[in-house]
Image (tube, rainbow, N blue to C red):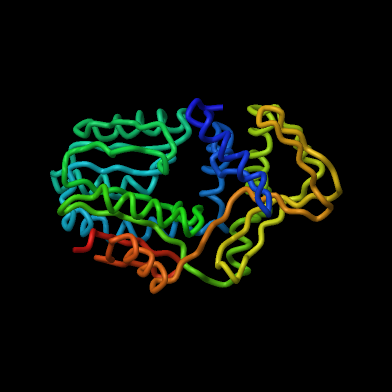
Length: 314
């Protein structure tokens, strides 16, 4: 397990989340080294349209983003392989303003590989890798003006109250002439959404099940994969994908390192992640509550996905 995924904060969060109804695991458990590789496989699946839709937008508008931000520092939260980020790096380098790229990720292995690849491809840009959960970071580094990017609709993995906290925190980080760039998956047909999270090859299921593997390894837990089936569902009330494992029989699970004994009823769900989908008017209200306003809103040609440039208001 990467060192960034272990520690008292994650353990305490895991204890609390397993006491909730429904029981759940922090999505951080998905992103050990194997999980990060599986997620990269997911991004290449034909049914998983999100990265391609975002790439279409950034390919068309990165030069405009570079012109409107003049960023000296680009920070990317939850960077992964930073594949779509290269559109921004290219545009900012061509603009001649960018001095530093700071990718942030919980997977140390993935982050080091990404930082090394970016440093080799962009030798004139300093690369500063930051290992950690972007929700728990302190002050973000870099010379102003900074552009903070959270792409891939990663913000949709947070519950509304945690999104509010993160957005307010980022709004407090941003100074004059600085900006936040967000990728958002938009509400669409439920069948398309469910297909994107339940591919025929089983990669998405393997990714979700990897959370159990990681918890068993790190916390000496006794989750038995055979006693759960993968069940991603669209929740129309909350407008999010509920990505969960459902118990096929009544059974007990021990988590010794957390001092927990859990009982699962037949049919009970264990949530491993949510993936919220967005509407412009609702997200604009979320930004306003955090002290941010939409400067620009771009969508792909199919209107499946949006990239939003937000700035502090006032």
